[in-house]
Length: 123
Ligand SMILES: [Zn+2]
Image (cartoon, rainbow, N blue to C red; front, top):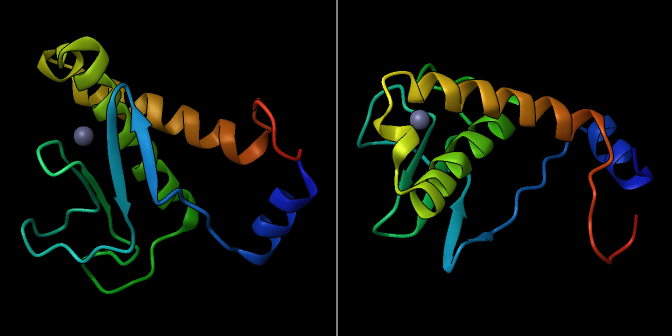
């Protein structure tokens, strides 16, 4: 684990990119986002708008754990990857949402507990 990542975890701070590129699409990450369109929703991708929206507060008004926010980030990114690279096949599968949840949980654990491979930049 990098010194910077360890420090961020110790301080409880959260870094999410403001924009990600998936295939040829730029997707803006809007966090924190307050959902008015769907009660109890913590995350949503709007493919047409090119936005991933993530709540930092749950429907009961409680701050969400950093781990849950990161899980939501990966969940919505996986939906974007599915749509761009697999033409939504995962979304169309009977258990597609459960698979997205499982993969998001795995990615969350992996990125929180390991150094991630990268090209360039400081380690
Ligand atoms: Zn989903």
